[in-house]
Amino acid sequence: MGCRLCPRECNADRENGQKGYCGETASLRVARASLHMWEEPCISGDTGSGTVFFSGCPLHCIFCQNSTISESAVGKAVTPERLADIFLELQEKGACNINLVTPTHFVPQIASALRTAKADGLSLPIVYNTGGYEKAETLRLLEGLIDIYLPDCKYVSTKLSSRYSSAPDYFSIASVAIAEMFRQVGKPVFDKETGLMKRGVIVRHLLLPGHLNDSRRVVDYLYQTYHDDIYISIMNQYTPMRTFLDMPKLNRRVSHKEYNWLVDYCLSIGIENGFIQEGETASESFIPPFDLEGV
Image (tube, rainbow, N blue to C red; front, side):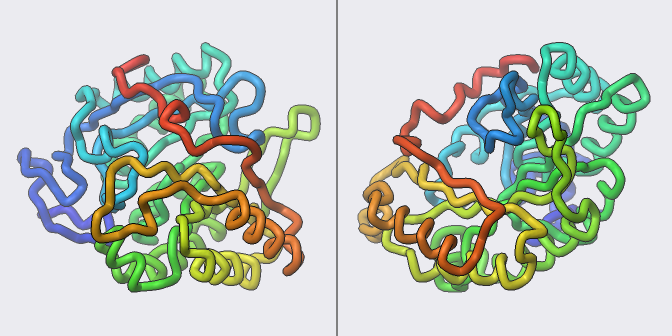
């Protein structure tokens, strides 16, 4: 039976070595597993999030900052048993949580690894870190295993999602996925002593240069739908990774004026549960080396 884990439903025979739209077969591949300090404060904490970067991606945004792994250029094959050991090793290193980055196309294997690791003593919160392009049916395979959902909500506009991610259905898919995530984990819960998130949903939105109107629509949807029952993280770290000759808006970083406008807009409509980025985050130095560390 062909793969239908993600909304692409490419039907590739990944179990027998055929690569799907994600660029991967059914063989788990990991590009890096390490403590990561560059997430939201309640995720990274003081010791770092135990972040596992999976190779491949079902979305393939043209501006991807992690294109080295999203395009499947880097990664080492591991068994679900080895992945379970990686989770436990990150816990031993003092990770605040286990952070699964771009995990969609490996959900069945990850679910198996999580069950094994939990049986062997894994006690950290599990974070599902995704571009938001998820099937609710696939997410339901993870019910009871995930504590924190960390999806993107990239666009409302079908024109933008078509042009930048080849996914005209992005918003209709992502909105249903976020609703399923919220159903599973509910309102945010924090550790009173450390401030670390123990349970809940944080939805990220990356502001793209020249696209404030669509960003406003994203924020409006999230707040009108969930109010303060989720956190909204407004990101300014867009970094042009290549030259877009036919898309000049993407050839620059987000201006301080644009970002401040969006933050002010969030405050003006009443958003209280949110995160903003301060300082200069639009830099390739914020992209970790995908060197198979910890794999």
